[in-house]
Length: 115
Image (cartoon, rainbow, N blue to C red; front, side):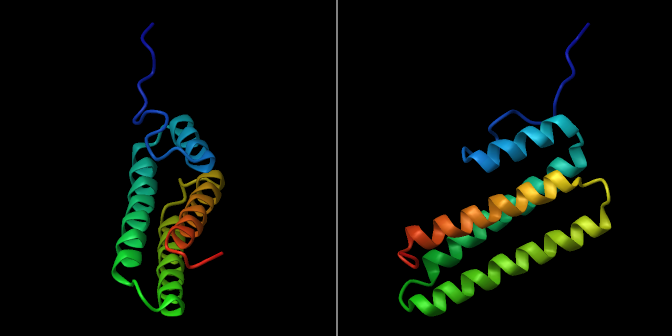
């Protein structure tokens, strides 16, 4: 009997504990539409956060504020996506939020915006 083929491999999203957990949940749910949406939202968030942090060197307070606005905007967009797509489980939702917040905190640390 052939093995069920998953739409992604373990470790595809990243190597943090929350990213591995999110990836495992996506593999278990095996819903390509949800996987695409979750990975798109997370990678868009990550890419935009790093691009914004690189472009806003200088005034720490302003940079931190703009990064916070970006984070909140992306979380709100995902909430809207979740409301429009009931197939996104609560586990996916909470783990994606966890990954986004962890990425946000790491970006602040890497740019010296938090001690």
